[in-house]
Structures are given as structure tokens and as C-alpha cells.
Length: 454
Length: 127
Image (tube, rainbow over all chains, first blue to last red; front, side):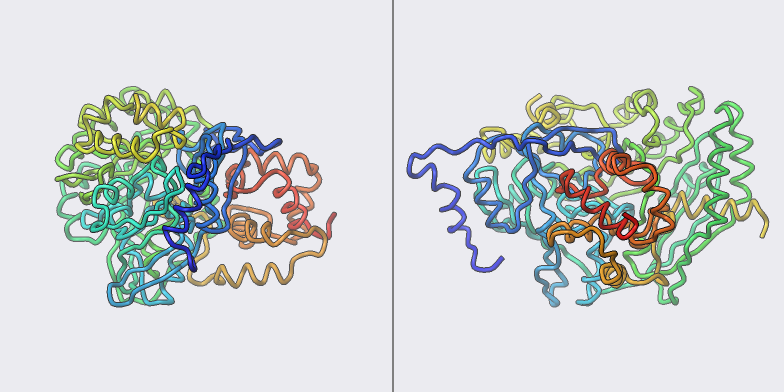
């Protein structure tokens, strides 16, 4: 942003108050288009959408208006972070590579940039992200606001890779935040749920470009669990996808390589075979499915792919779904997963979607899923978007609680302030900082009130 | 190749990697795709500069490469069947999501009029 200073913005934002002028309330925009999230499970009719062309425009807007607001990234969250009858703030014009430093291997992006649009510009400056989540169509702001993470005991979630950010508060104040300038705000704002204002840019710690080799194979779930710690320690990334109603898991390891790129697309024939398999599984009652799934799993051969890092770490998910993910302390991970799988089997839950089980390194954010003094195991369950996820998720969620699980902020959960206070040592600190930055609560919707007010 | 092995590869690739036809290293670069698509874009249906930016940042993710069976911009064969359903149906699918396409097609800032213009833009000369 050229020529814009915090002072200018403060002046603009406080102009009305300084001269005793009323701050205009945001008015409804007739005919505003309804909003829905990626899975289609959430909807709202916002009063309007505001998509600023610059940080200055956003600061002016926030500083000169009142009324409810919710920032939205790509709408990938399954929890009701976005729905509002106020205005949506969309930062899809605050995008792209803004700055970089080759010495520290860091780069600054507009926070509206999609993760999938960062790999190529970073490669052009000789940098690459340390890790990426499985899906890369979220915006940088949205992914970090929800503590989105990738896989690997050696890697924190994305939020802890942020070294500096710019926050425009609900009142229009522009604050450049890093660990030295505002330590508490830095630890809160890296996982903010969009509750502290609107983050417009972020600087990430990166590294030099690299190539990765992914290997997939099928292995009995118990075998994988018994060697999981060893495998997680010996591979850059290691995770498994337990097949429901089966003894087997699909297993994935990813390591650095100098091998030539070889990452072929699945053929149409393979895609058709996949569709047939899923249809066959879905048509077979859960109690009868185990021999079928086991038999098919045993036929699955290993496969490999080599590509630049960002094309191996993230993938496009074209089959829309809803998801619940909890992280539990590492030592509880295997037992928690076993109980989830046992419950699915015993209760004959009619679900075809595999689970996902992976490790995430601890970090120093206040509300990160793996924040604090211990690493975590993340366990995910899914339902296709066209199915009612509630009976399945309602059955499994108490198991996650039993093992001290923390919910992914962007994925389905039912916890509120009372429970969350017990799970995060700094939850009360976050609540206090939120109230200080947004005393009028204009960034709150019903979901956030449940989380932070109770 | 053994059919079950093919099935296994498919399951592995599509569940584990989840890449249902996503571009790979051998595919054209996305930026080049978009530029080529814009250069070849049909004349019927025009977008404002802002709508073109929104389209490039969202709709183009799938409607340039055809990922997830999305109809490719300007491909008359692919769009004819869709157009036969009527503009209102296409617009409803865009707003509510349809098959692999998420509601709003990833454009969180777009209003209904923007989507209407983008549909016309992609259908092009067929209108």
C-alpha cells in the first residue's frame, strides 16, 4: 500500500468521532445475493457485500460506519463463522505477492490470496511455503483465522508460520503486528476467527524451493498405528486415511526428492472405477461391507508421485462434503481413533468416506488447534454434502471430548465458551482482547457469540 | 491392467490425493490458460473489468481447464446442453451450488447480476 500510514488511517477512522459527528450505520443493500458456504450447509442473506479495493478504503469503511460485519475468505468453513444479516467484507482485491526478503526467506501476501495462488509467485522469487493444508482454495486470511494445518510432526499449522500481519480493527485502526511490537495481539490475531477485525496482509516464513515425492500404499490400520510415531519421525509428512468398515488404511508419506517430476493425472478410466467402487460400497449395508472393502483394499497397489512442493502438499477436493475435526494430545491419538472406528463399526454407521489421521506440531498461538506445550493428533470424519451429517457427527463428537479434543474452528463442532475455556489456557485472554478491540461486538454473529460470550 | 488394480489406483489417487482431474505439471500453466481463454473469449456477453477479475479469480479455476466436468468457456458442445436448461436454472445452480461446483462458484463478492453476466460471458456466441 503506497503512502498510507497508520496515522492517516487513524485520522480517517476517527474523523467522525473527533468532530462529534454521528457514525452512519450500514444500511441494507436491496437485493443482496444470499451467501452459502462451500458445502452448501450454511446460508445467510447479508445486508450487503463490501469488497474494498485497498486497505485505505477498508479502514475508512470500518472507521466511518457502524453495524455488524463478518469477513469471508473462500467460504470453505463448515462452521457458521460467516453467516450474518449485516455486511460481508470480502478482501478479494487485497491479493498477491506484495514484498519479500531473500535473506530471511520470507514473503508478504495480501491476505485475500488463495493458498493455491501462492506457490508460483513464491517459486519465481526462489521461495516455497514450509507446508500446506490438504485443500488450497482457502484464502490466506481464512486458513490462518481457523488454525488450518497440514500434516507432519515437524510442522505447525499455517498460523504459526506467520511472522507479521496487518490488522484493521473494527474501529478502523491499522496495526502492524509482530511478536516484538504487540506480543499478545500477535498470538491472538494469528488464529482470530475473524473476531478481531480484518487482516489484510501477512508475512510468512518460507524456505527455498523444493520437490516432494509422495508414496501411497495400503496397510492394516493396527500395523500403521503401531509404527505411526516411527513413521512420522522418519518422513517429512506421514498420515493415514482409515477406511470405514475395514481393517485397512490408505497411507501416505511425503519426502523431499531430487527425482524428476512425474505426477500423472488419474485417467478417466480410473475415475470411473472409483465411482463404481464408491457406489458399490454405498449400496452394501454397513454390516456386510467389511469383507467387500477389505477385499478391494487388498488389491490396491502402491503408487508414487513427484512434483514441486505445493502441487504435492495440496489437492483439489471436487466432491463436496461436511467435516468434523478434533485434535487430541498426541499420546491419546491412537486410542481415540480406535474408539471412533470401533463406534462406526458397532453402530453400523453408513459412511463410506475415509477418516484422516495426522500429527501437527505444537505452536505458540493462543487458539491454535495444536497450541501449547504438546503436539497433537488430528482426526477428521466426513459426510458428503448431500447427506445429513448430524447423526454421525453427534455420535462421534463425545469421543473426541473424552480424549481432550479441541475442535477445528472451521469444521463442525458444538462447543461454546464454557467448554473452550477449559481447552485453551489463553482463551480468557483472547476473550478480553476481543472485547477491547471490538467493544460494540460488530464482528460477532450468533456463532461467535456462542464461542466467545457464551 | 487388472481391473481391481485400476480400481485400487483410482481409490488411492482420488481418496488419498483427492485430485479429481486437477492440473499437473504437464498441464498448461493456469495463468497462460486464463490469458488464452480471455483472448479466445466469445464476443457475446461482456464483463466489466471488476467482473473479469472476479471471474478470473473464481470461475476460471474450473471453467478454463474443465476440472470436475465444468463446461469450458466458449466450448459450444459443452454449453449447449446446459443452455437448454434455461438461464434461470444455470443461475440457480451457480447461487446454490451444483454437483462439484460450490455455491457462488468461489466468488464471495459477486452479486446475482455479476453471475448472470459471467454465465453469458462463458456461453458466448451460443446465445
